[in-house]
Length: 78
Picture (cartoon, rainbow, N blue to C red):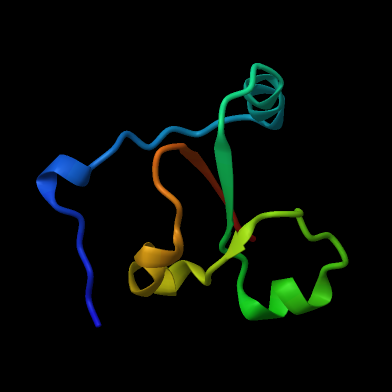
């Protein structure tokens, strides 16, 4: 299944540092963390960010309906 964003849904993509994310959280900005690590990295890691949505990077389009809207999204992977 292929899903693409409509032109009105396109957003800016910017790199952020951990310090910037921390600062934004401290200001009360609603942020969603999207964990896109591959299955091997996920299984090998003992670090799991509470509340993060877990979706493999190559399957994000299939799971767009599961990703809450109306907030900044910080994606991380290995």
